[in-house]
Amino acid sequence: MTQTLADINGFYQAFGLQLDVHERADHISVEAEFLSYLLWKQALAVENEQPENADICAGAYRAFQRDHFQSWAQDFARKLSSSSNSQFYRLASGFLLHLLNLEAPRHYGQSTSSD
Image (cartoon, rainbow, N blue to C red; front, side):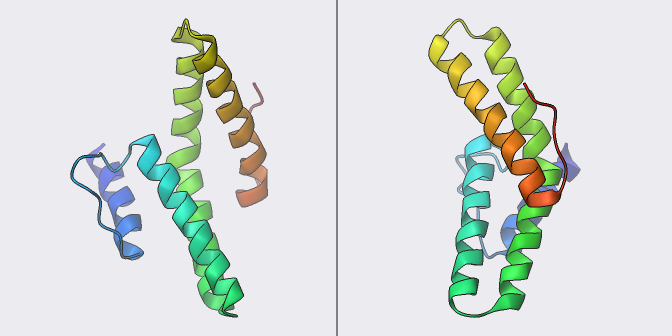
């Protein structure tokens, strides 16, 4: 776990980000925001005609999604769906699983199990 957190923090630091001490580096909201940030940086690089920077951001997105976000978020959504009595959380977790299944092949060429 320590190595995983160090790796995640390494991604953040590589892009000049420092984590607020109130949240863990591997919290789903922090990881999702980082993925959003990478997409934003990629879009800016494309807009500014900086293909090398766009490629760096795209590669970091794929690697972070594959190595840190995808499987953890899938497990989280499955556990939430199976343990919640709330229809809202069951629907939200189903939406998350569907989104993850759509994103996986689009960003790093793998399909995931569909639920």
